Length: 336
Ligand code: WQD
Image 1 (cartoon, protein in one colour):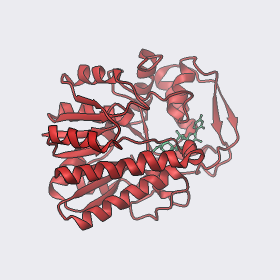
Image 2 (tube, helix red, strand yellow):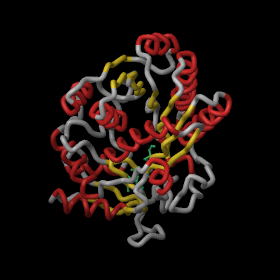
Image 3 (spheres, protein in one colour):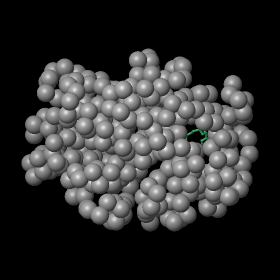
Image 4 (tube, helix red, strand yellow):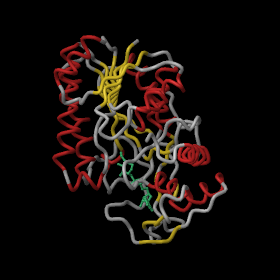
């Protein structure tokens, strides 16, 4: 069975492609390489033992998508392609509405024209906004507070409307909490361009000596150790969730929004201490001011994914820290 994976050379996408290939799917990647490297394709093949088909293609290229879907009669699409930096989305909202919303509209239009009716969409817990009370369930109010989160929610609503208009069209939006870690081989991993915004890649670059020290954004939150709490989930668990979502679409009509999280909250200091312990390395760090827009506590209620498709996160913090560091150590300059 052929699956189209947009954004398949990216962080989450590449790990999903490995698991799809290992599960026996034929994988067709469409990616514009704007935030990733084609070097990942050879890594995916080394891990999976089979190569994906690759097209350097922007999902906004309607003709390119039409030709791809004509050549590859895929059964379903997994849509990772998009831009995803919260701060950048505030500074440059049109880039986010163009890439994420227009890109999704072009993809869904091309899919409908080609008769492709199953969609797994890469959404985000950012759709819940700052007021949601953890553990956050899928019925929580969605009130995104930045353009990035608003694009994700808009695309979910487009899919919801599409499933109502066309009963044969089926979609699952997977709301990721905080993806971290890397494939255990150390061959693929997170490759942020420039200085990382996210905690784990930042810690890894401090550990590698590429950055001098970690600033802990806020020590005065209403949490056990005063630092902010998040739901960190191993990217391999996340990848597996996409395979279960594909299976779920075979038997469930309509639109579903489903959290992918561990259901456990972990503070910044706990991540730091776990990383230092499992990797036997000291991370220079200092307490700094809170980062604007950060919440104190955000973690998932993961019960629906377990109920609907028997999925739950299997890997823990030690795996996340060990695998993230192996990737960084073995690839000091990522895919360069
Ligand atoms: C985690 C915690 C920081 C860096 C973001 C996006 C979300 C999703 C995941 C796309 C926070 C603290 C961080 C640092 C720190 N991305 N931190 N020092 O903000 O929870 O979520 O990434 O879907 O949409 O919002 O993740 O890794 O940036 O921060 O203290 O140098 O680590 O304050 O408490 P976040 P993060």
